[in-house]
Length: 104
Image 1 (cartoon, one colour):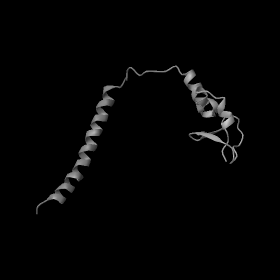
Image 2 (image 1 turned 180 degrees about the horizontal axis):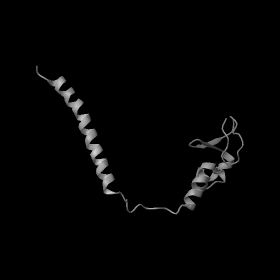
Image 3 (image 1 turned 90 degrees about the vertical axis):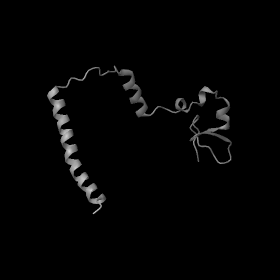
Image 4 (image 1 turned 30 degrees about the vertical axis):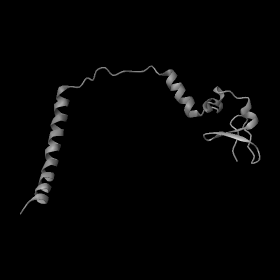
């Protein structure tokens, strides 16, 4: 059966239980809970992944990229390569269109 998220004891078939999502509570355990206690994340122990994420967020200095320093010769070379590949791919595509849509 299910395990109570508050007391960590198994909920038997005959016992009254409440459920919230995939978490279950004994009726007696849920009587003392307030609305804030029903935030399941606080009831469950933190997982190692959540601990690591919190540490990374806490220790993060943050960075913003404000300038990209690229030499113009690299920009022109990449642009030339892009155009060359486009022309090379356009030749077989145009031959395919001519072959498929020719009225001959």
